[in-house]
Amino acid sequence: MAEIAVIGCGQAGLVVATSFASLGHQVVGIDIDRRKIEACSRGISPIREPGLDALLLDGVQSGRLTFLAEYPDVIEADFVFIAVDTPTSPSGACDLRALKSATTSMAPVLRDDAIVVNKSTVPVGTCDEIERLLRTSGAPRATVVSNPEFLQEGDAVRNFTQPDRIVLGSNHPASLARVASLYQDFDAPIFTCDVRTAEMIKYASNAFLAMKISFINEMASICDVLGADVSHVAGGMGLDPRIGGKFLRAGIGWGGSCFPKDVTALEYAASLHGVRAQLLRGVVETNRDMRRQVIRKLRDELGPIESTRVVVLGASFKPHTSDIRESPALEVANLLRLGGAEVRVVDGHVAPEDVTAQFPHLVVTDDLLEAARDADAIVLATEWPEFLELPFDELARVMRRPLIVDGRNVLDDRVVRDAGFIYRCIGRPGAEGGTPVITEVVNERIDREPVLVRNGRSPVLASD
Ligand code: UDX
Image 1 (cartoon, protein in one colour):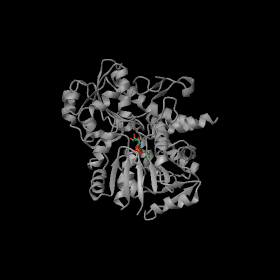
Image 2 (tube, rainbow, N blue to C red; image 1 turned 90 degrees about the vertical axis):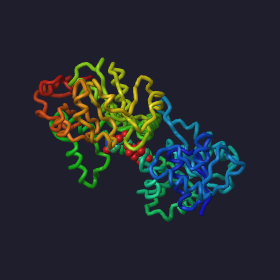
Image 3 (tube, rainbow, N blue to C red; image 1 turned 135 degrees about the horizontal axis):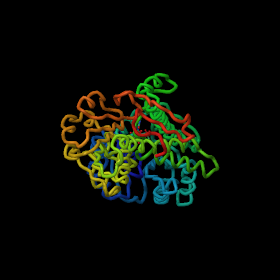
Image 4 (cartoon, rainbow, N blue to C red; image 1 turned 60 degrees about the vertical axis):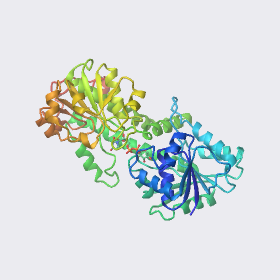
């Protein structure tokens, strides 16, 4: 069994620390956030993640897992994992300040033979830089291995203990082999490569997944005007194993702590070196447009958004997490608010103060019926299970206008319409009732400023 240190006890770091401890290793978690460390030391997870609480408590009680809010005189570890935040700075660049500060803090207290394993998502070339920094800051023999993490929030413990693959990259074969030995009992292929390639695999994977979602969302927009159903299109496409059925759920787009920052950082890195990553730009632009589509669909039915009252169901960036970072739901809510609507966000799983810290004008509640009183529309933005079976009859009674925009394509359109609602969704015009197809195309091509008339409703694709 190895001695392991994990620098950074956030979502990824805590999962890594607790999982390694559960496998019998001796682990110390280090984080400069004292409150986080106090909670962890008592076996209380500061993060909501299925399975994490039990692993943490078990690790702490068994003595295999300890926590420190300061660097000790010597980090007694064979492997020092780095899992600190690497957010996007306003320029689009990846902000490496936390990573660099962790590197210079640990360098003088590392054991001579310790291997530094980087888990944080970092621009290609950063591990080389960490190694240089370690060597000039007091760790002359330090070697670095890149070991990107592919954890999904809500499934992170399972992702770590039962991974699809383990990627390890280093310019030091002996160090790489030692890190590989840590994973030898995992039932997953270990993919080894040079350090820059490993860093790139992480970005390319996230960019590809984001592209898959933006692709199906673009198909949804086309389905909307051509009268096809995007969920069946995804089903039919996904049966081709070269395509695969996962990550083809159309909706108001992707968000969260990884996709937005990683796609932006990759595009930024490419542009710094003279590469125009046009596909990545399109992936981001299509994603942004999905939020605007909701507003267009509401406008189709309500006319001007100003002074309407809209309920947004969901605040977190996806269900089963309280994380609101880059949440599509809150972006939609904010757009509505900017358009002059009175917005109430319903989500009983997030702390309202977290939302209002970012969006002071949004009202957050867990009282659906109260929020819906006199409302003109509901937008389902995050598919929490409790939103799948809404009390439609009651809602129709208390709302001013019974309109639902299903931004995640999860409601049963017949049930919703039977309760008297107008139902709008993403890329499934047939589910919206009525004749599903554009009846008139005045100009042939969108780049010639078309006026698309949708069954007598207002134009839907003009440049708004
Ligand atoms: C993602 C990657 O999946 C993970 O491998 C990486 O390590 C971190 O980033 P996560 O941010 O937890 O994980 O969320 P994920 O479940 O991938 O969903 C990302 C976003 O895409 C969410 O907003 C989700 O609602 C959206 N999404 C996902 C879709 O809109 N359609 C889909 O088909 C799938």
